[in-house]
Length: 415
Ligand SMILES: [Zn+2]
Image (tube, rainbow, N blue to C red):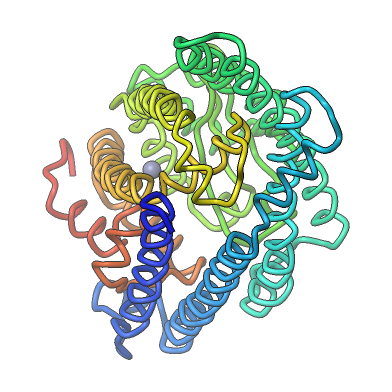
């Protein structure tokens, strides 16, 4: 075992142990009584059900994490990487097709390993708690579509990376970064019109009270709300959601039909105001810059490690290559990725507070946002009392009680 192997092993096991500990602490942090803020929103039965849901989801997550870790360690220790690399090279293809085959086989293998878990999660757990609306047909076509989409987008980017590192010399990482950035930027523009409609139907919101209220609101904050769409989220799940996509004239607000069924007009205006808040406070652009900066750093680091024979030795591959280097570098990044995700989650939680505050300020008070959040938590059986370690590691949104407290504490213009 060389240094690289030890770093990867310690990082993988460390990450696993952290998630086990945080899962157990999270379950241990649940209390039998409904928090005062939620009396009347959660009855005892619903509260017990939300805790059962957290428990079942935690157990499921731990089983999945254990199986994934063991599968990876077994594949690695039994010489799987070296064997696969030799098989791919044995075909005598050029570096790019060989690399695509290597990366593609590993990706497909890990998707196949994850498939039983996806099936169990959708058709057993979500079903049991009354969330599942996905038919077997929808599940299968979703799977197929995401495979094709992943092969086209992911395959294209991997092929470009293999090509540049093979031919572009010391500045290859810059070319890779430019190519990735172009794809990311184009995806921002085409996602709302080309990619998302592959999975959901987007119907323009019909004329009526809700549409009038949303447009009136948008005018007061000078937000050019051209597209308000109803998304058929109910095809897959009873869970509700709202989101914002696109830039410039392609800006769209998507409201799940499940959300519209659940919330009153003022609550829906507050939810949209929250999404507008993300835009107005610059969160969407900041996230995009971070993503571009992150990929520049990754490609530069990758260029440094592609030359290290030790990295290939650690995984039992004799001949260094860009394709194997790409995969092993990904594993070597485990600790850095973990650290980075802590920072990004923390930032995301701060953005949520800012967007909530924006909604309260611009809708004439915190009331509608508070009741919207309460309903969302009750309907999705949210865990109201997550353990701080769990929040720190995994949550992109602050615990709902903290959001409610911040909304109540914030001064608002007219309420
Ligand atoms: Zn948000």
